[in-house]
Length: 95
Image (cartoon, rainbow, N blue to C red; front, side, top):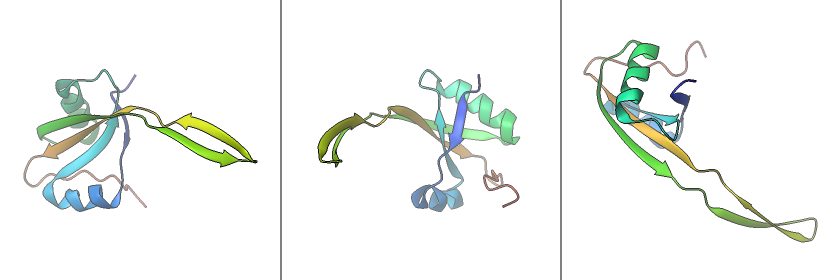
């Protein structure tokens, strides 16, 4: 099973690309060393720094069909990876 689940692509994260920072959703049990190794192997870049954070799921209530429905968003872990000077990660590929 891979440590990296998917890249997180938002307006804020795209702006950080100029600062050599890329954000990925990762396994909840992954540590910084595993994340660094996975990014270096997958994208063939030199990783300088890894910051991690957990996003805790929140309860949501909405009205559906005249009834109140309660749900919860999922909890996930994300990592902000800083690559070395001159390195880039092409997340968009051939789009």
